[in-house]
Image 1 (tube, rainbow, N blue to C red):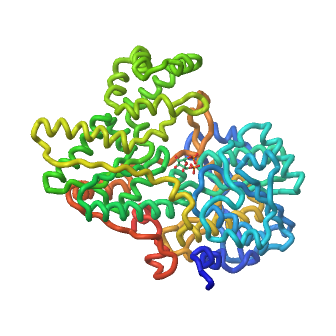
Image 2 (cartoon, rainbow, N blue to C red):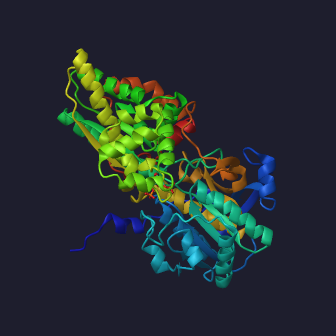
Image 3 (tube, rainbow, N blue to C red):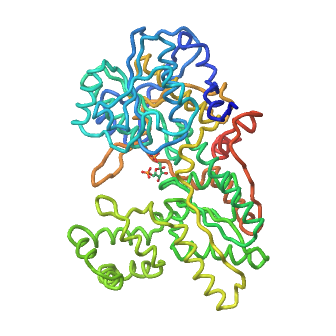
Length: 553
Ligand code: FBP
């Protein structure tokens, strides 16, 4: 018996390109727009990027291809966390490159930026590429978090590229990787090294977006995957009527993922880190919001509910970040060894009590013991607390439990509270890309090659008008320097791509804020179900609610 799997079916899926990229590379012409300038700190950024600053925005059109017809040898890397669609960026790049000439070559450097330094690569051919079309994951060449940022590294990259005759690099990454891509492009341009650099916007977190980049790839599939699971949990909660589910969702600092999942599933509560920061909310205030939802629903006989917690929320609680800062100081250098040598938790607790300010100790004291201990166990290689590893879903449910016990004692709450905990993160990062991400990523890769063949460097591959059908998408490129401003990083002023957090005056948050009271007290769950790959376009090709609201749909 022959088993026909979705994986096999997806190999054969032909991603949709924007209309202007559809006629084959020979029929793609370029239109240059206006000169650009950075979003802020123009003089400083111009001074740091004298060779790549201020270049023109560009758009592709149907027309005669006037690019130089030379052999192209291109290298590509995947950088940072996985995001659905990465394979298709490489497939699109490969197909465009081979469509121009069968002699062109694509090198894939393995394991992320370190592959470029270590000269660890594969040369793609049809058989290799075909096994990865429209699939999730980054396993085609692997990824990594090594940063390419020093002149020594750049010199090695130049040597490696020249040894293979590589004249262009495509860096598929988030805001940091694309910032570094811009610095690398400037380095090559200053040295007239003859190597172009093009970036592609990746991250499930959705925080690489601005007036040019409408969304990063992977956000669509990851949020659909999480929303399917959240919808299933909601249906279970509503069926069993006995559990409160605390669901933490990935997304690093920004709450775009949590907000999109809330827009798709209408849970009872969704915290938004950016709002927590803007309102300077304390842990006790957040706990009170959650506990009030539990109590209000219990008063209507509903001892169940679903609360979404964005991964980075505790970082945004002002008192909590002060506490983290003090803990980092407390355990700096040799003091960590003294602390670790203490035999019991009681002795460690006394050490902590002596070292923290009274304010931070008060915050520390209200945390459940498991979280207190986690703060001292999970340290990064520099000895800092890893905030992303804090199980905030358990932290809040434990604090809600205490809050409800106090309400019970006062006679204001009579319900039952049985919490369950979930963390949705890695299960969404390598899902089969949705049709949107398959199409978007393939287009980004195809378009990256067009930017290369027309000789651009220091550009981000740009596909826009994304809430319309793919045919109406617009392909082009934007200088990365246009997206930059100066920020203080590790005690130095650095040029960086501005990270996008949830805007509290933006349409997606406003839509949520107007409805959340109803979602909190009533049960308005929506069950999105699994991503659909085949069927009507309005079901299979639609992208996120966030993008639709941002684009006034
Ligand atoms: P990128 O910013 O590199 O795309 O990674 C996103 C992310 O998935 C975050 O949501 C998460 O906090 C982090 O990576 C987890 O990192 P790691 O893969 O190293 O565990």
